[in-house]
Image (tube, one colour):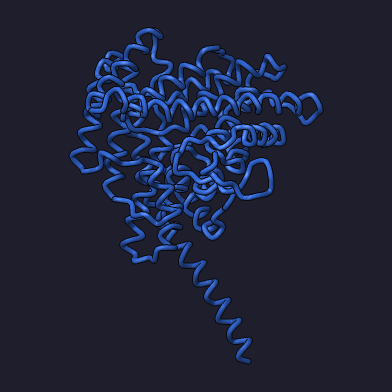
Length: 419
């Protein structure tokens, strides 16, 4: 009888835990979804103002200086951005609530003056800091706070990008490659879904995904073509990550003063924009991605987007890297894919998914991203292209605090200190 009563109590505790996390994660999803929707509309407003007043990019140097001063006044000049979020999940380091308004305002400033940056990476910081604060107020212990932070990450990513499955798995997969935080599966899914529905109720995601009408069926030739493109995207993702890590080091070496660094970086991006003759490479570039998938090809676009983004974020502007990665992958895909015999739009979509995987080291997330953005047709080819990119991109990545603990080539643990 005592054995049965212990088992009953054990099952009751499991149901209590499920109920607890459904309540907590739904609350986090609704809260972060509301703020993420406001963030989306803020960035939309900034982009609209810049589109209507192209001369506003002349304020790029001033915008960079304003962001540095904003962080300095708030005592967060040395903020580590998304890397700190990864540390918060893995090592339970505390996130400050002030991160949320700072990344909110600074990313809008970046988009307003024409810096090349996305919004999803910034949203990870926004959601994580809000959820961490909520976890502290709920008096959660250290382990539960980690799950709450992942819930905030998932809700923010889902609310802004409209990919709830991708967002939930990304929050669990990105921190430590090779070890998934499965205890966070239900909380992350719940917060991601609630975040998505909250933002949708406020008018976001009326146009879901990207239209790709020329996906291929599984056959021998498309398999070889997709694998070849995956290998090329691996090299592209390495180039993107190296540029993103090299730019801030060069800025710091030659321009030690952060204010001067931001001003010069803004001036460089401004000069490149004037040389380009338009603002194709300013902002996130979602509209340009849609044009490329629909038929446009700009051979040099992937290199220019890397350059614009590295100069922008390396100088101290704030924003995300994910949409610039997708832009870069799409631009490369629509150029290189047809050379391999792949259809134009399908090759752009393959390039987006594979380059995202190579840069983030998240293959499961990338497969779900391909499904939610482009639909199920050709998913096996997306998965192959993504897998090849994951394997051949080595141990590079966007986030320096991301830990890769399992080898990409052999079933063994990997010592990153030797890499």
